[in-house]
Amino acid sequence: MSWPRQVQLLAVASGAPQYPKTGLPEVAFAGRSNVGKSSLINALVGRKGLARTSQTPGKTRLIHFYQVDQLFILVDLPGYGYARVPEPMRRSWRPMVEGYLAARHQLRLVVFLVDVRRTPSHMDLQLKGWLEARGVPFLVVATKLDKVSRGKRASQLLGIARSMGLDASGVLGFSSVSGEGKRELWRAVLEAVSGQEQGGGFSP
Ligand code: GTP
Ligand code: MG
Image (cartoon, rainbow, N blue to C red; front, side, top):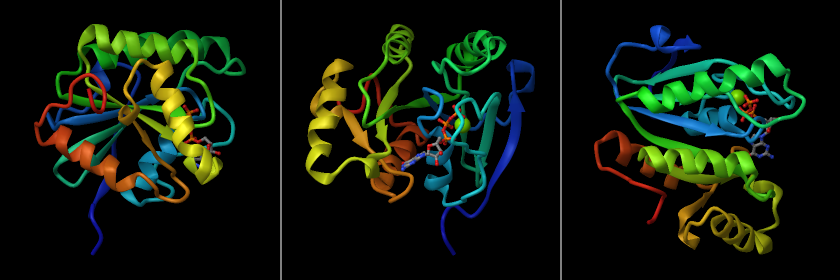
């Protein structure tokens, strides 16, 4: 039988009153709309249709909590920074997502997704600064690795690390299509939920 055995949608929330009250440790997935947060959660747990994904940015509009066995919770956050997303939704993003990130005591790690093909945006850098200022541990994951030829991957990852002020090993490559990076990401997630602090970037 494959692990995890059971993954279920526990709660969908726009604010604290709707957060689940299990007290289990949480790992949240943040980043630009369409970067691949929901796809990454599906790839990680090996359940294709668990989190809804779309080619159109703005698919995940509320905070989704997925419980993994009786162990921990993966939190799919709505994305930011896409011009075509309707204005009311853009306005509601900040209180919804920052409210969660600022106040959730059982949050152990933010997996911060960027697209391996793109230079991190102004909003990516803002989120990074915000997480650092509040001491929220995060790990930068550059996803859609399958879209970049093998020869160009190392330099893309290095460029992202530099523009985010991290060292070269501070950005983990990942692909929801090929599964590359899955083992390393699981290691980081399990370390975080088992109480071993990560602190300020993948490899400070
Ligand atoms: P929002 O919910 O809008 O914030 O987006 P999201 O970050 O959850 O993105 P989502 O997982 O819905 O994926 C967006 C699109 O990117 C979909 O068409 C996915 O199939 C595609 N995608 C996601 N991850 C990968 C990847 O690793 N490789 C490739 N080739 N495509 C990917
Ligand atoms: Mg999504």
